Length: 254
Length: 323
Image 1 (cartoon, rainbow over the protein chains, first blue to last red):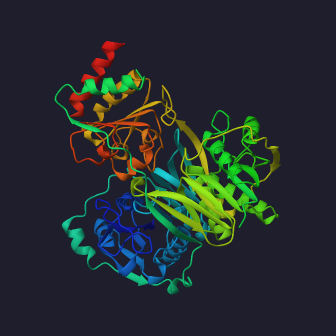
Image 2 (spheres, rainbow over the protein chains, first blue to last red):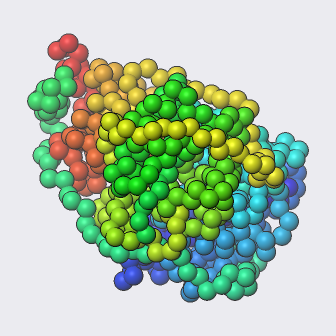
Image 3 (cartoon, chains in turn purple, red):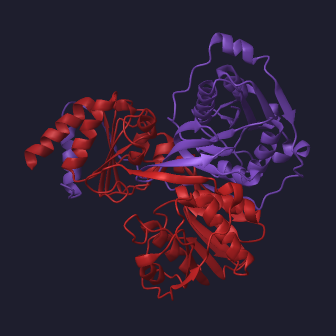
């Protein structure tokens, strides 16, 4: 059972987001593993263990041959990674990203399953896993909250607006997982040390046969959203619940 | 490019009615001028009248999907109609499960970019632009399509007000799903619906939402109790949904529901950008949180810096005493 996991390395979401001069997200600082992707890495590791053998490989696209987030996933237990890093891909749209990652999957060796997060925590376009499936000509299941492999197919519980569906899908396939699908492990010290020598193959867009990138959208304006008027903020003194009652009363909801 | 021909990815509810989200998109599409068509995964059934009343001149139906997930199936049906000569200039999708998957597959089939999470669209001469909130709604980005159509755009729920009376013809046209080959390998084998009582989260006039500040799963009872008392719906931050305290259907935010109630009460929610996107449009916001630096206080009309474990029981008791 070989699983490929798509991982994104993003600016620390705990820091305030910033835009570059071209209005794309500033990504030149230290990048970390998107927490949304740590669930996919953990799921893949568990599936390989359950199958009794195989490997977890990573694919990623990031500027400046950035590997710090990849090292985190390798420390969790992934064996190797393919990293696409190319200045021509700065500001790439989701479709281009999907083509690049599908190309990287092709470089990562034989696989039974490709896992991705539902959406990244920085750009959150939320289309890349399904676009990648189409580029690869594979079936797909999005929004998986559990995955179990059963011979040549995979059984998935897929989140819906009202609850969840049980879905069965032939392999190979692309499955996108929600946060909370599994509890990601913390890398062990041994894992962190081992990750330093695990192979990361660097490739460019050209290596994948993707021509000088262009995409059919451009950002024409960025402005501050209208702010809400500042409200009344008070420290609780044991009586402030009365303020809430009064507030609700004025709105006639009670 | 003029928007002479617009499609809307059109859905029905499990009960067979037109979905509110679809009527919002049809109304906006109609306001942009040109001919509007609804493209329905499955059959429109009783929803035909509502789709037409909100502007649909034509209603494409794929027919029963027989358990196939919509992504591969509906995008292939759309591609077949486009190849047959009826190519739209714009396709509007809802930012939800089905809309997202169909749009993704279609973008590859047509080699067209996608713009998602939008809250508005405008056409000015030949230029089509969408607005998208970023950084939790702190900034609004305007993006323009620069290539050839069909343009593909997805919109967050409640971005537009639905309005009937548009008098579309509502002619139903079959748009069958062609053979999908390997991409058609995913099928639904069972459907599970979580039981809920009270008003729906995205329709309730009052929403009481709980977050990590509740401390433990059992304390969500306070949130449900208050919601019930106020005839509202309980909601949750992503943090406690991920932690497994409550089902995903409770989640308010970027990856959950968008709510715009009369009153939103955030209990023990810090106000991560992920969450704010889903509730910032509420008419009134009450926040209770221990940390006075929590971002939620930046949008609150009434903010109580205090312990939810003290304030919520007091509030419940006071409301019980009144009723």
